[in-house]
Length: 548
Image (cartoon, rainbow, N blue to C red; front, side):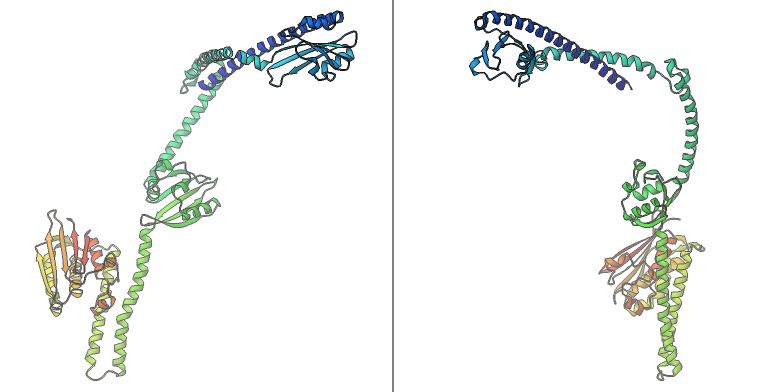
């Protein structure tokens, strides 16, 4: 405000000074011009009288004088004599304004400015008794030329005017603004200032009370909203009618990588994905928009709903686990159906052959063995599916103290015949590894890892089960073989359900495709971590369990 008052006062003072200067100079110029013209008229009449009595001799005696020029012109416009130029070389003057007037009325005046605008010439012409015309001319500088002549003094005067105007403006603005700056807006009615401001201060006091009340209410509601939205796992963004962000909760900031500075900006400056643009366009048309985006490997569902009065509410849901669960459920259902059909078809085929009597005598035992093998495989598959389903549903199992080393020794004894059949040396190393857990699930972990080491190991190779108690109280299980290994592109998928690196080999060995998946889920049930290292020289799988 002080700057505006200073600028206004300064410009006003400077304008007044310049106006006064222009008026004074204009008045002086007009005054001296009028005096010069009057003096020129007197000199013209005196010269006319001289020419009347003395003729050309008078003009020759008059000679050339600074500031005054006499020209004697015949009635037809021919120049008879000129005190400043050769009359014979001068053009006809009959068309000159002052000469034409003098020939008609007896006297005439004319004013002309030079081509360079530096001089103004005044002409006064008088008709003599013999019909000729005597013209007197005097020149003086024009206003621009005069100003250029006094440019330096004018600059000094203007600079002084600027300084004086600035000082005056500064002093006046401080005197005007001082009482205004001293106003205590927190207590408007307690100020001692201009009487003219009293109605305004009374209104300010009343409005401040209303504003404080409204601010308190808004603050309370904002805190309630922040408390609710901050605790939400879903992202929430409130938008105005133009798509500007009014509010954004921490969950939404995390999804879009935004910060507090995004408030007030357009939502599309935070994320320019076509999916977000599409749902916002629908919301702007008063429709509900939905889309799915992927951020940092996670899937999010965007739902934009228009609100009355303009604007929209954008909700961001993390649907990664839900979509993953749906996908796994679909795949699991399809795989279970397929895996169940395979042994069932084999059993039905063998049974039909036996029923129709198409089996040669002596081959029945082989078909009975095939039926028993496929039934055992079917039973194992069903048991594995049940175990996975129970773990998926978060079912609780009774826990007890389990020594992984004892479990490994027991399983090694059971798998020894299968290992000897392939010439694989199966050994248990390490020492006691006691933990609290579900014995059956831990048994499944050791069994499946050891069984895979035998099934997928090289004939005549080695398979080792190693257990140890960690210094922090946890336990570790390692199962190592020197088989063909797992290719890098398969290593991230082998723990998925029904995933087989070599499907033909897996079925030939009676695998269900759920062994490593059970290992993963059983380890997760005990908060364990699984590590996999594999090359063409063998595979080592490590399961580490924390201290409970």
